[in-house]
Length: 63
Image (tube, rainbow, N blue to C red; front, side, top):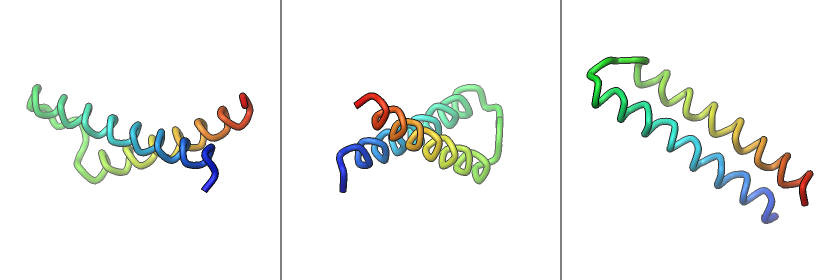
């Protein structure tokens, strides 16, 4: 696997997990259900995919 692809995938995983953890923490502290759990996980996957794609594109373009 190319290092550029690997870095993109890792950035996507990190951003996805960070998004889910931040929203779950907010939900835990405030006792307010912002979104349901399936929507939260779907949003996390979406954030991860977008971040991975942007990371790959930027890394390829810069160097």
